[in-house]
Amino acid sequence: MGSEAIGWFSSFVLVLTIGKQVHKQWKSGSSQGVSKWLFVGQITASTGFTIYSFLVRNWVFVVTNALLLLSAFLGILIVFKHRRAERRRGVSGSRAGGPGAAQPAHA
Image (cartoon, rainbow, N blue to C red; front, side, top):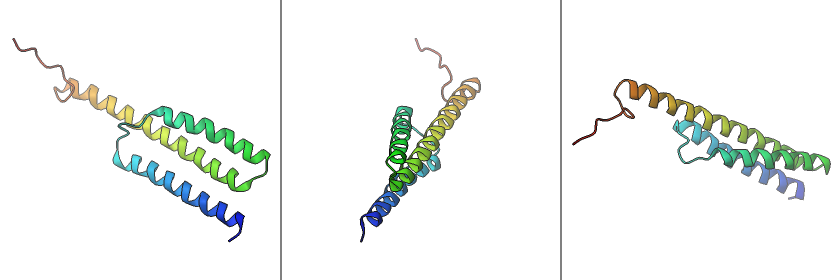
């Protein structure tokens, strides 16, 4: 197996693993415990690595880092979507007397 094939295979495994995790986060309907800063860091690093990989003409890493950048954008969008939905549930729940509604104090 040539070095290029090892690189492409490793890229495939990494992108598949990260993609599976983002899909799991989306499917679960919750981003509880997931920091938006994880994705901000990944976006920053992947952008830099994509540019660097392009400058040194390493196409395995250009593709890999571009796909990781895409997954980071999807991940952070999912976090924002879940957080917005949680806030809406909290607001509507407090109006309807559901979870998050103010409870009377007991004497």
